[in-house]
Length: 76
Image (tube, rainbow, N blue to C red; front, side, top):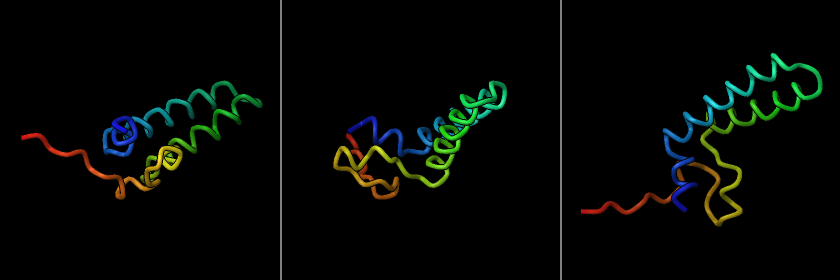
């Protein structure tokens, strides 16, 4: 799947890390129970981006690690 391939690429990982940082900032501002839930989501987003894993990939028959993803064929 092209989406999973993108999310495991360097730009996809950067997007996940930036989104995680944004959600973390919102979690700090909100506080309370919702803030804690958002904080957990943010840590998951940042962690998967840093570690290079995509937890939803196995549901589509793809490997979880970004380095194990098959590359798209190049067109001439």
